[in-house]
Image 1 (cartoon, rainbow, N blue to C red):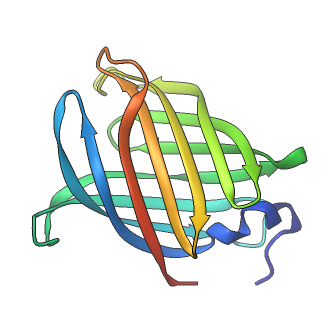
Image 2 (cartoon, rainbow, N blue to C red; image 1 turned 90 degrees about the vertical axis):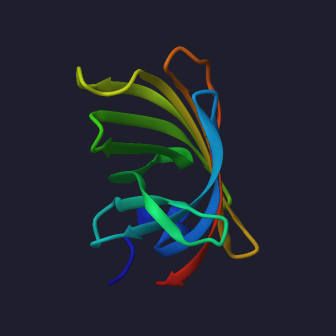
Length: 160
């Protein structure tokens, strides 16, 4: 299926990606995690997105599930981008940002939470294609802490 022309700036994201990274925050110990991200399209002007992560032990084996999220990525005129993400923990985020070549910078425009979700108020994400791998960094503001590093990872494409 042909990719919708509006998606050309982010078409490099398409596919199934897997890899590992590091998480940490003032409320938790730093740890290694594994991740799978899938970007798909159906011919319309958006990408579907799914991500799941799991804690890794020192040998790189899966210990237990961590976070998951899903949503949609939409390119707007002049390489602007909107990303809508939902989390099973009761958080919904809308990010806005810009695509510059193979780099995407996003910051939350809206965060909505259920009464039972953790105190989360903002996020910032940076994605980039580096030597064929998908690299990203994620900052968050939560549980009374300002926006700061939370996760980063390097993912390899395992399928188109």
